[in-house]
Structure formats: structure tokens, C-alpha cells
Amino acid sequence: VYEKYFGTFGPMKRHIAWSVTKSVTNALTGMAVLRNAVNLEDSICDHLEVRKAASCQVKLKHLLQFSSGFDWTEIYEDKSNQASSVLAMLYGEGHRDMASFVAEHRLRDAPGTTFMYSTGESLLLLSAVQESVQKTLQKGDVFPWEWLFTPIGMRSAVLERDAKGHFKGGSHAFATPRDFARFGWLFLNDGCWEGQRLLPEGWVTASTQVSEPFKLRALEVESGDAQGQMWWLNKAVPEQGLNDVPWPDVPGDAYAARGHWGQSVTVIPSLDVVVVRVADDRESGAFDLNQFLSLALALVR
Image 1 (cartoon, rainbow, N blue to C red):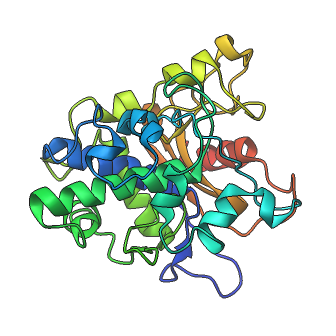
Image 2 (image 1 turned 60 degrees about the vertical axis):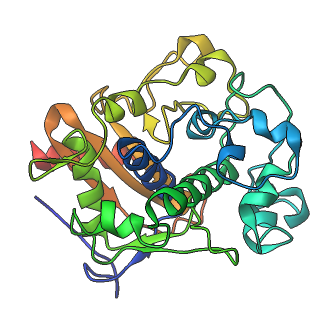
């Protein structure tokens, strides 16, 4: 319907997705479930070598819902680098084996009892999926392309790995805006593409309902945040005192993959719309997602 680019950026240039990658990890996990390569009730220790026995309490479903209970600090700017678990994982002591770095954190809470947004959990989830897919199907290096990117035409997609060879499932996917729109279109169509089911039946619905750990006890949640399974939702969560929807000018069934510095892939099923934005917003408060989406919908209407 409409697209607009700024400066030298254009439709053929890849852009880093940052945490939009977490929703890609959601999709790849669903595809592994569809092929019986993993079960969400599996312990991380069923698929990864984990030195800390207590961490074996953590299941894949806990990672999918950001409810592992690991004592993790998700900060990026304005604090000491040493205070950030995610920066230590990506660029510091954990960079050689990021999954092991995450799994060696102490358990702050019993798994499944609290919600805490964590790039480490999404990376750990995709690492576990990758190891299982390699053991059962011998496709650990190629399954993101064979199962997701190639079937839906995301030819520009890049998914970085750590030094261990595991995909960075929390932050380092790259693609063009049009290809991110393809990813949104897959979810808009309930995980089907050109008549072929790529995600399990019910996966999209389950991923876009407020998760039980979020309802139970959400830690360090900003006003207006609501989470399903690695997707942000336009829903009130009265259990957490969040009585208003995050994007009041947008239909309540909207949900979004969102990333640092302004990335977003928003799916609005009731209007049959996908809205993609790539950006580099470094100034706090400079962008209003609700206003942006309402303007996009005005064009659609």
C-alpha cells in the first residue's frame, strides 16, 4: 500500500532487527515443534550441555515466555557495561559460548513463576532448538533457511552466530523491510504460506495471548507493555495493574515484534495489515508507535 525510505536507505538494504529476532526465534521453535524435534516441556539440559544442575529446571516453554527465573539484567545504555548481562553475553565474557553463559546465571525465582524480559533467554532457546535439530534431523546449520526464510521468500535474511556456532536468537537477524513484512504476513495468515502450514495449528493464537507468567508477576515492565510468547500485545493486563492497551488508536488484536532503536513488525489481523518500520532512534521519546501505527492505518483505510 505504501512505503517510504530516508536518505540512502532503500528497499534492497538489510537492517539489523535487534529484538525483532526474538519473534523469529518464536517461529523457528514452532517449526521444530511441528517436526517433533523439540517439545516445549523439554528441559534445556535435554539439548544442551549445562554445567549448573539447578538450571535443568528450566524448560523450553519457560524460555519462550521469558519466565526462566534466571537473575538477568537487561540494560543497554546509560549504565556501566559491567552491570548488563546482555552486553556481557554479546560483547564480553560470554561471547564465546553465549548459551552456556546464560545457563550459568543463578535462579532468582522458580521457573514459570515470574516474567522477566531477556535477550539471553531467547538466545538460549534457539541454541537448544538448534542442537536438537542437528541431533535429530542433521539440519542444525540450515534449518532457519530451509524451514522459514526460503519458503516465505526472505532471501535477504542473515542470522548471526556466536563463536560456538549457535544462532544469536535474541538480537542479530538482518533483512530488508520488505522481507520483514513477509515474516509478518506469515503470522497474519496463521503460520501458513501459499497453502502450506509452516507453524503448528494454534501456535500463532497461543503466541499472541498474554502469558500466564506475565499475569502472575511481571518484573521491570514499562507502562503499556504486555507480552505473549516473544510478541508484544495490544492488550490490557489488569492482573498487573495495566488497565489500558498500549496502542489505543490501534485495534486490540494487534501484536508486534519490536526491537531496540525503533524496529517493529506489527500484525493487525482484523484489518489484514502488516506494518514494518526499521529505524535508528537514539533519542528517548522521539518516536510514538501508537501514532505511527494510526497514521499507517489511515493510509490503509
